[in-house]
Image (cartoon, rainbow over all chains, first blue to last red; front, side, top):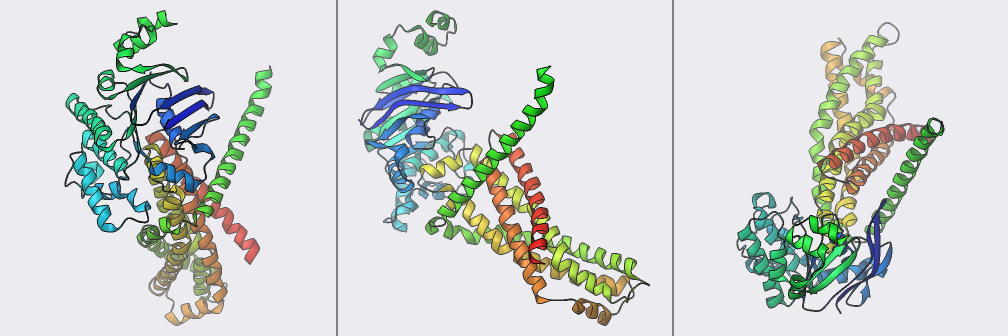
Length: 249
Length: 260
């Protein structure tokens, strides 16, 4: 078991977002988390890297309780976890080369030549060769997402967390990103956790799909199991039919 | 009825809780920033950039303000003193006021607008676009990377800019005295030297250093805790300028009471 959340509760003011959430992610799999907007999907990812601390419960990465770690130990865990942000979160004052190399510069044993070569390699892996000198403001939405992915994989993490990697992109770019996610798993062997609203995308990239609802995982299963599920709430989400939600409640 | 009685009480209570919470956050940020000092490998390489951005880039606006302050001081002093005391005291008033009060405070206030606002806006934008979260996931301490170099640069460069601005203001006061007030250079310099103490410059430098700490610290604090989108960044920026301007005036009075 590689990443595990146990009984996580988290509230923001009066809004209780997570209510005893349990989730485990197996080594080498790609798990997609689906759910309605505002359900707290991104909050789950942020717990996995210690960006948010739970009010109760625990988040474990490789058996280590993320919330009990000191900063040094937490940073060690973070080197094993790449995070692809929803809007890329590239540093807009830096060019793409510097953005991708940021994580590498925190590894003391890496020399400058190795860093330059790794940046080149990661950009090539996401089909963005030769854009090291360009700035985030000069890139399209799809390129930004891919550059964000290049930055996330630069330290060769064991886990990749994708926060809505295809939202707002055209269908062709969505397919390109989906293929990259599959490629990350097949070529780099990373375990992936993907937050998405896009069911076609989820079917293409996932080994398992979990649905978050009312602060807990309501359903979790393989793609075939999810497709065959007769849970009205899940069907309402998948098919975009609000009338099914009434049957679910 | 209860509503009428309780509403103002509730309002004061909520206002107080908010202030206490802000103080708590500020205390936490200060402690964490002090702890981040040990990460020299993160903040060290960024200090030079901040010295330029906080200090060198602020010189033109500081000199502009100081020049006109010096001119007005000379004219006001002449208007007030003519016929009452010897005219060479214009030099004393311009020198003393520029070095001890107007140089540090007016430059501090203008830099609260320039440096404080830019720190709050930059960090606020980084917060709402998740760039600060990204820093953390890349194993950077965001306080060491963003706050420590800014605050150090503020503490180092504010005294330099303010002393430079004060000297420039005196120079323009001198020029105004010669050209507009029918004074001789010797008279102005005589007044300038009459009450000058080297301690005055040290006093100005100490004040300026504290202004640098406040402006960069408050700007970073509000930027770091910005919420929402563009609106949140706007609120953070406004608060940074207002609060650091108020604290500059409070500190000014504090140093006068403690050091003079």
